Image 1 (cartoon, one colour):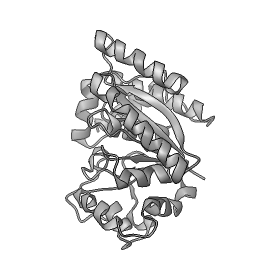
Image 2: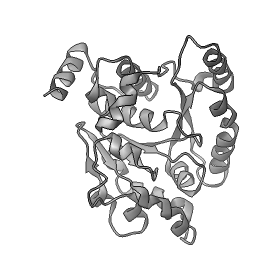
Image 3: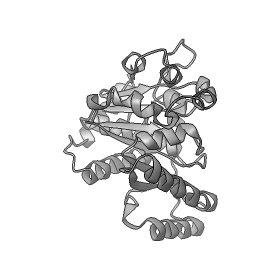
Image 4: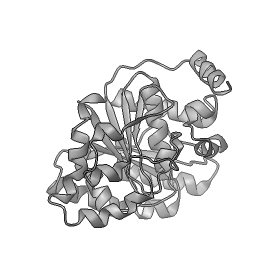
Length: 274
């Protein structure tokens, strides 16, 4: 049975989608079966994994409205072992439609329950808000990974997110817990970054992953090409960081995996360059 992990932070621009799709891609490349669920109406995880949103896509919205079954909406990506439930702007209207649904907080739990046994991990990219869609993701999830940019404002909003997780745990999903915190866009030369990093460590302690994600131009470029970093530029510093994070993530979950070697990186780069 697959483990469901929500990537959540109500602050936008903290590297949430980048972390979700790149961690998922590396975990898949290391031999695991992974499903990314794009629950953000912006659809950045969908386009970031190479899915053309201009086509007549079946999406998460169609699942919420009950028009299709989960298996009919799942699409493969260019990374072997990595699938996606795509999203488009249509999802923006889903929260309004869900308000009158019975057990409205449990809709995604039912949708993912149909395919949970088919994957080792299901990774949900939540929208940058704490609305009904995010509540659905947290209700369906076994754990939460919180990407946090190492700056002042993202740190200030973390109390609200933790309160939401506590309420979900009390009322809807007793088993949910914080899996970990990933520090993103970290510039070790900045005094502010280092101060914020210290505060994150004080607040979350051992929940913070040792691996942090540095600012990296290749990471910023990859989504515009519809590719995760392991395909776009597998020898970049950003790629090295997400590979390290994937290894740490799988080690924390006591999951055996196929290591990605230097030769594997070179092969990935050659395939990408055609």
